[in-house]
Length: 427
Ligand SMILES: [Zn+2]
Image (cartoon, rainbow, N blue to C red; front, side):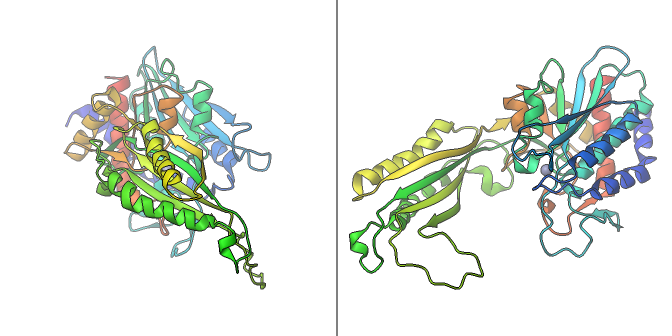
């Protein structure tokens, strides 16, 4: 190992206690989403920390985005450190929001207790541990390479867990991820310290509604049951669509294995009278339901195009309209995300790959996420392709009770990040 590596690794090792304390402080600010609590507090904390390390700090509220209100403003923090002369900019983007706590915890979810080399709490793994590791990596790099060229940016952004519209999407729309401003983006999501995540599958959410005619429940033959029509839609899906999706396989290295094919989830279904509150003691009234709604969540592959994904479903429904008496439907798009995958020969991929080999003694595994994360906005709105997710933490722990992050994993991934900074900015 080179002396330069040794110096950098030493600078990270000596910051171990600082890394632990920083992670604990971040966990103890419960930035729950929904509703989007304490966003300003966490941004102020990150901003103050990075200001004291020589960064200039900007606070950006995503006015008017979903969920933004005076009670729950969508705050983002963006910090930038200028090197000594012109060069490229490396940006670390972490979301600062965390999901609800849920049941089954044996640790205080916001206590950030350190036990046996692990820090426990909501958001440790997803992804305040990754944020803390990137801050320590940048500080250690700057301390050991004060004459580096270019710039380092670190952002803490809102609402990734609810689509990222008040976070990365907003910043991208404002030009913060323009390729002339930022050249390399690393998102320290918990993909494991030895894996590089190149992108994610696509999403198409839609609502299908079948139509019927209301009548008295004792004489259903006088009406037309929308729920039975929906049952026929599901039967048709089982007979033709699910088998078709199982044949569609991707060359993307998606994990887990089951997500290497196209998937469809029936997210919800509802027909007939609205569900009454739990404390309502009355009986339902006797009616034939005249409408039934289903929300579908279709995840698609890089090899598929959105129009063909939609056409598959619409062809199925049109076929039913042509063959099933009185069948009628409507379909409404709710949300789409186009699949994205950064090329393996992209500079940020190559750099982080070499850094992983240097720190861990073996090359990375390349993966693609079954779901989506903020890379979608950096790609589609920012038009910046040179972007990956790389960070500490075990993906399966995200959103679980007793979520934790390993201190050693944070140290290792901070070394990878710092080494990447050196290659890109002081190579
Ligand atoms: Zn996350």
